[in-house]
Image (tube, rainbow, N blue to C red; front, side, top):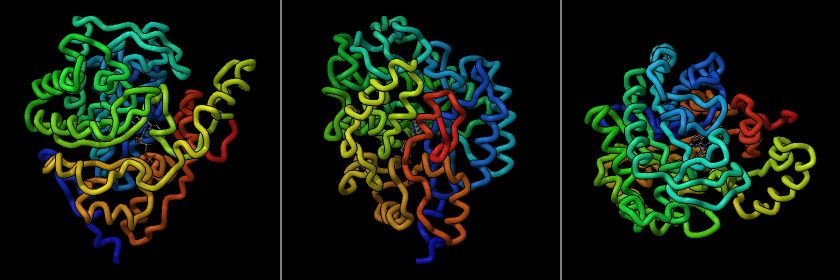
Length: 399
Ligand SMILES: Cc1cc2nc3c(=O)[nH]c(=O)nc-3n(C[C@H](O)[C@H](O)[C@H](O)COP(=O)(O)O)c2cc1C
């Protein structure tokens, strides 16, 4: 097969937007914004470089919708209009190169390293080793304020020139917390059963739609498996949420897995850089952290396999129907990606770690050289973020 004739290089639509090929850069936190969340030189460099790679669409790392929704230091933010000019300037440059960019908008809920010991979440909850917090339950007033914040930040994204937004509904951040029976124990209209747990997302979407209008692409990333210690979203149950999403009018769905606080290396299957991660702790706690990480992630538990979020058959696509499905997680070999799109199992292939190491890999593929990515899934890029270092491949770097 001549790779350039692959369906992977054919255009496809998300909402009214035509995407030149089937490759997407999956949201990847950059840890590169200025302290106030505005665009910095480091941040801009990442996106200008990616745009040169001719990926059909780039999704930014999680951008905070508000000050209280911020999870990490140096996280980009759309909490105020003052953030718009920096993004506009960058997006003009990226558009000139030919790139299309979606803003991934997020609220961290209990998954925040900067909101103190008692962040607000759907319900009171058990502590975890990663964020070391004791979440407290949000009031209905909090919920309504956050829904408005989602709408306002999506409008800022549109004003800044983003080509669309992706709601971050995966990996244990606020929307994922509302969806999950592990995090959401509410007995009011925002919890109780699957429909109630979906209510927050539905209202967030309606608010965004009202603010950005019918024609602006709004997509979502959700989990097909939470991997929380007990009773999170499980693969069998995800189809109901997919039905809700279609009924709601979403323009595209990216499916992922894992919860940062409890199963980070389910999201990013592969190596567990326990030594590098433990070095973020004070010296006396490093050895214990290293052991705890090794115990929590025994080698085989989340071993890397190609296309690890692929489900047998086309069931997800059958539920989603015309709504584009974006598959992320271990998408590596060109022949398998080609087969997945050719079979109609997914419409887009989304890549994260390979593009950290080789942002221009698609250019190579489009010229007929379809070697596998050289990323070894060591996950030291993630360890770098834990140290508040700017995103880059750190396979051979010392910590
Ligand atoms: C360094 C790093 C940062 C990430 N940041 C985000 C993020 O901001 N938002 C998100 O939805 N997923 C994030 N992810 C998850 C990826 O988007 C993707 O779902 C996961 O890495 C699996 O894809 P891959 O096998 O191509 O790396 C991140 C992953 C890594 C390794």
